[in-house]
Length: 279
Image 1 (tube, rainbow, N blue to C red):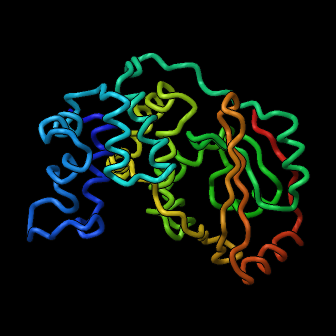
Image 2 (cartoon, rainbow, N blue to C red; image 1 turned 180 degrees about the vertical axis):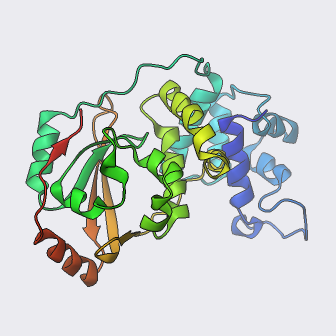
Image 3 (cartoon, rainbow, N blue to C red; image 1 turned 30 degrees about the vertical axis):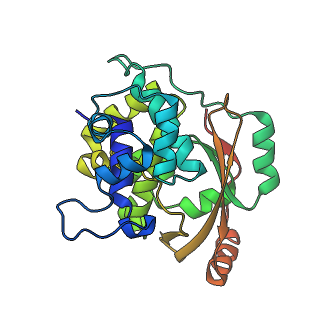
């Protein structure tokens, strides 16, 4: 049985073309990417030890080995942080059958005031599980008719994988699905994320579970939404991580083109809502 750490190392190795490391192409082979022997040589470890890590038979590699693997795979800063996180949760105890304490849904008053100052921008506060905790009236305008905000405790991850309307609303549904699944590895706590994944998996099926083993951060691309009345909207996204004790983040959607700016101006002329925090 694999582990998050082993799955990540294997997925990253498979994504690397040997030529990018100055290695010769040794012809056709069953698996894409870098050979295990090549990665082991670059990291200064044995092929057998690398196999144990990738297959989940070694769950506690030393910091020196972890750093050597990060160097051998040419990981960037974000990938190195993710690798260290996977080492932590792979070596630790897995969540039990009981639900852990849920992350706080309270948003600090100062962050609510920040949202008010951002009006009429499209912005919302969420956590890595996908809970939508507070949002501006601009966000409500953009999401109106999508179905996301129709529940008392909206959750973007659950919506993406279980609501059929999401596949129409998100023009690049597969990209958004990859992003939401990857975010679960960075959840408020390893125990909470594991519980959430186990709860969602039976409802979301293979579209969800197959993404959990990829581990590679999705590329950052503009977000395209098929709005029910404003047609396609294109957004650039900015993310602000709040203090670790909050386990929350502020996301701001910025129009990526002139048609989106004009569409938002038309939407704002209609009767709108107000800033909302979801307790």
